[in-house]
Structures are given as structure tokens and as C-alpha cells.
Length: 108
Image (cartoon, rainbow, N blue to C red):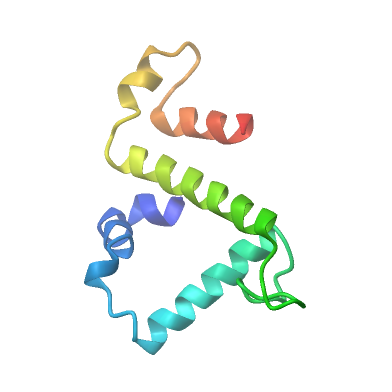
């Protein structure tokens, strides 16, 4: 999230598949590394995403990875777009939108 907040335009670009060269080796490797990192949080990082001893990722791991990815992506997008400022300002004890997001992550 810190990277995305410091580089909002790059975050937006990274989310635009139609603007990326999906055949570029550096992008393929970056996606593989990111996928392994996320898989490692919610399963076995030594097994590439989409692979297991049976050749497939357990469905529960894929669902959990999707929920985590969507949650963080959504929160950082809301922060970048300034969509949480008024909500944070109206909430007792919230100093900022970032504080609200921290609380949301703790709650989850």
C-alpha cells in the first residue's frame, strides 16, 4: 500500500492490462514473484500459484488470495482517489483516511 500511495500513477498503470505487454519477460517474472509472495501468505510459497502436488492450487487458497488482493487493492484505490477523507473526518477518533484504512485492516 505504501508503494501505491507513493506512486499512484504507476499503481493505476499496473491495473490496466490493456496497456501492458503481457509477453514481456520482466513483466512475466514480476507477476510470478508477486503471485508467489501472495501465495506464501496464504499457503505454500514453494509451489507456484496454480500448481500443487496435484497440479492445481487448492480452491480455498485461491479464494483467500482473491479476497486479500481485492481488499488491499480496493482500499489503496479509495485512498488514492481521496474517497475516504469525508468518511474518516465524520468518524469519531479517526485522524485521517489512512488511519481509517489501518482500522479497517485491523478489523478484518
